[in-house]
Image (cartoon, rainbow, N blue to C red; front, top):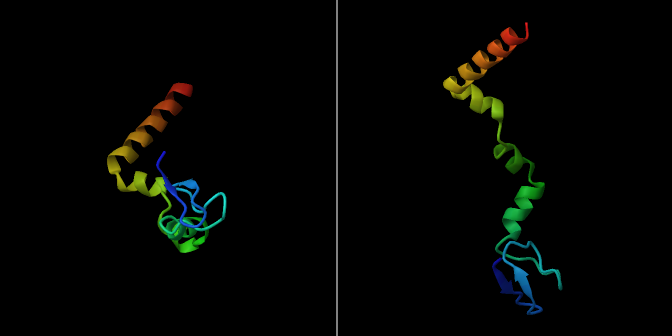
Length: 77
């Protein structure tokens, strides 16, 4: 794990940590993206992965699942 020294207290912290564990100083390289991921509603809506949109957009996968469902129903009858 990559670490760096906190400029305020000189203790080692992870590069991915949003704040220093010892003094609480924000990590300026992570804070902006961290805050957006945690609390920005528009960011969450924009970056959500919607499986149904992917299935419908990819016609081959959609047809495969329809055929698979039909075969499973046919086997159970």
